Every structure is written in C-alpha cells, then in structure tokens.
Image (cartoon, rainbow, N blue to C red):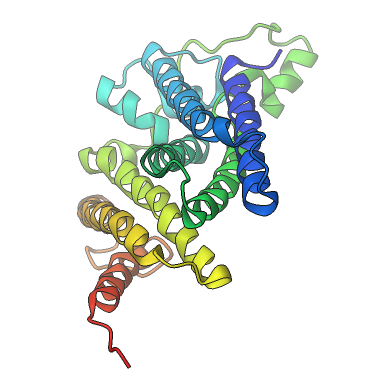
Length: 280
C-alpha cells in the first residue's frame, strides 16, 4: 500500500502535468481548452505540498517511527524545536521543502499575473518543468518511505526475525552537529533562497530564447527576495560552522562555502540592471 504522503506527491505531480499541458497548449497552439484551469491547478498543487510538509512535520512531532526518514532524524527525547528542524535534516526532507517553496512561488506568480502575457506564461512553463523535476526527485527519495522498506529491515522481516508490522520504539536521532540553534534556521533560509530563484531563472531563460520584453522587471522583485534569504542563510551557516565544525575556526572552501558567491553575483546583477541605459 502506498503511504498517504506519497499519494499526495503523486497527486501534485499529476495536477502539475495538467497545468503544464494547459500552458503549452495556450502558448504553442493558442488552444484555450485547459487554460482556465491553470491558475487553480497551480494553487492546488501548492496547497497539496503545504499539506504534505505539515504531514511530515506531524510525523516528526508525534514520533511516527514507522517512517524511515522520521526514524533516521528524530527520537522521543529530542526537544520539540529539533523535531521540527529534523524535517529538513536529510536530503528527502530538503527536497520536499524545496519543491514546496517552488510551488508557493509559482502560485504567487499565477495569482498576480493570471498568465496574461506571453512572458508570464513562458516563465511559468519553465517554473513548472523545474517543479515537476523536483517532485520526481522527492518521490525517488521519499520522506514517506516506510521503515520496513529499508533493505536490512526487509531482509529480517523475510527471515522471520522481525514481524511484518515492525515499528521501532525509539528513533535514531539527529547528528550531534545538527543539534544547534543556528542549524534550525540555516537550511530553510538557504532553500527558500534556492526555490525563489526559480522565477528569475525561468524569466532569464525565456528572454534568452525569445527576447521577450519585461523579464528584468519580473526578475528584479524575485531576485531581491532571493538575495535577502541566501545572504542571511550563508551568514547563519557561517556562524554555525565557526562554532561547531572542527576546522580550527578558519573558513574552508568547498561546495557549501562557495555559495557565498550567489548573493555577490545577485548584487552585481542589481547594479547592472539598474544602470541607466544609453540611448543611441
């Protein structure tokens, strides 16, 4: 039986495909067949993913250790705040957080523009393609996978060592490095920044392909938001690394630490797009 959380993810995938089809039919063939359902469909997906994330949070708070992800990153003796932060402690949970904020951004774009221009429609098309890809990634590494699906547990169930309805009494708990105030806020700040960057990314791709006017104005408002959250996330992550990690309190360069370049690049873009153009 498919877990309820995975059922919600499959439903969000199906509705996303319908919304994408409606936008493509309108943009490529000027067919209005599904166009009136696009905005409600995107808002519906955002609602489904909101419920999915709240459901995962409930599982963590309630200690539902029949779910592998909950068992890995939670335990009965964890304070409530760390049970909440456990939802984004591993890759499956961060994928769900990421795709959730992507669709909140897509819903806001749909609500404010109603896809009344070609730029808005095409930007939403690329945003939905990105969102569908992230939903598929979330399904592949689902946070709603059951503990009995773990290979070692399934093997012991097959051998009769464990019962088919096996549920651990206690969880594995968080890594000690993650039991820190700064790690409560660092991941959501970063992933909100990553997710909201989808809109300006999509608008830039549309401009590169079609030379559609208005992409800078659309991108600027979203990039400000992204710049703020990535900047705060990197600052908070730097505090955490300074206090917790064993690097002798010197900054070590790597994929995670290199992400400070993002807000710097955004600042450069702001200066470039706000510079007065030279009329010939």
